[in-house]
Image 1: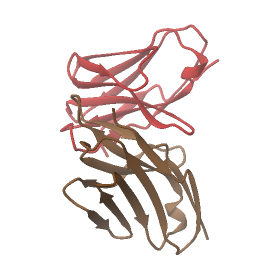
Image 2 (image 1 turned 45 degrees about the horizontal axis):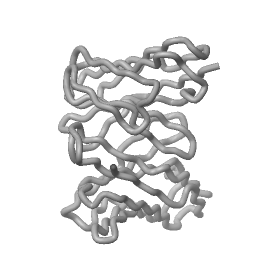
Image 3 (image 1 turned 180 degrees about the vertical axis):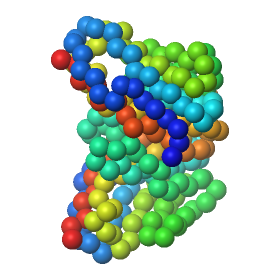
Length: 113
Length: 114
């Protein structure tokens, strides 16, 4: 299995608070992604990174920001959490980018009350 | 950008029967189509993928077919077993930006009844 660790695995937070989720990989892969999973919507891309300090928006980026200061870590921040951001968040990595599979972490279940 | 539609959303079959899940995509430039299986409470895991220069690919009881002209691809599972019960996702590559993004379908919950 790809070496991907997401933390925390579960988090409950209140509306309006900032939240940061961490994805750590030991594969030295260039590409990293944050997806959210909600019933009926599949997996939707929030942000992705194609190198250190190189990031771009996905389909559902509003309310989220990311940072990648080193190859192994990709952080997802909810600036001011809302109930609509209650979801399961998956980090994924890819070594070669285009036309190659993504390998997913175990996910973070976030509940915003 | 790319859009992927997946059908059906739920599928129930008897053990030993075949199951077929279909996906359509919108961007004719897409050239990579993976399928993922997600068991309850687990992460999605790649089960098979196909690239646009191939029309069909098989791996034991699983096969994927691709029709580039019609912009659709399908997952076929033969001789289904209870352990095939899971949610299956199709995806298509978005080739217009950096980073090898995958756009996913909405998922199909497959239930195999013993």
